[in-house]
Image (cartoon, rainbow, N blue to C red):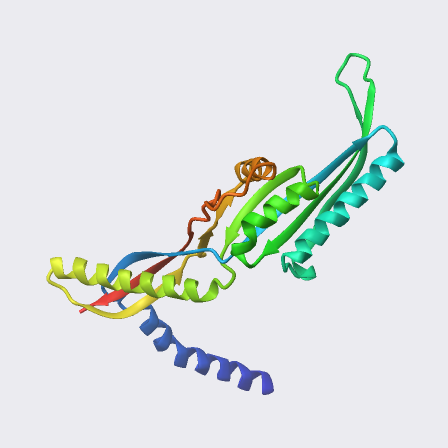
Length: 240
């Protein structure tokens, strides 16, 4: 008896839902116009990330390590004197290895101790003098110079807002050509925003090496340029 009642209840539920399912299947997709809006915000960088290194060579490993440690200490002292906080200084690589010639029978040349340090300088007015002092302290390798914007959130929001406005303007213009008007948005999606920072490599280091032995000049040798932050949105509007 209980089984019969359960079966009857399920049957009644299916009968009740069937009209709803049919109604959903019969919903007519609204007339839409789909557009893409893109915007770009260019911002002057306010910090720079430097990846630099110290390479020390000596045929005696202990001597090479001792000389390297002294140069590394001088490097860190220079960085800290420029106001770089400890949390913005990181040793990203440290390596000790023998170096051999490329002859048919390799010949031992020296032990090489290499260290790579990454730091973030948040006061760009100190950039020129810092590079010069780093070279004097023994830095002999500059892997990259990356100018960035510290607070990117507000610029992302600005670019997104501009992209949405651009999409709306495009939709209105296209619909107007067809004698239509744009109604409410039906669907909105955003692509992953991009941030293009300005990168410099060996040229800045080469300028610093030469200026370290020459008289200081007032002109800057590096142009930070601008950081480009873009946003792209896809929007579908109902046509009225």
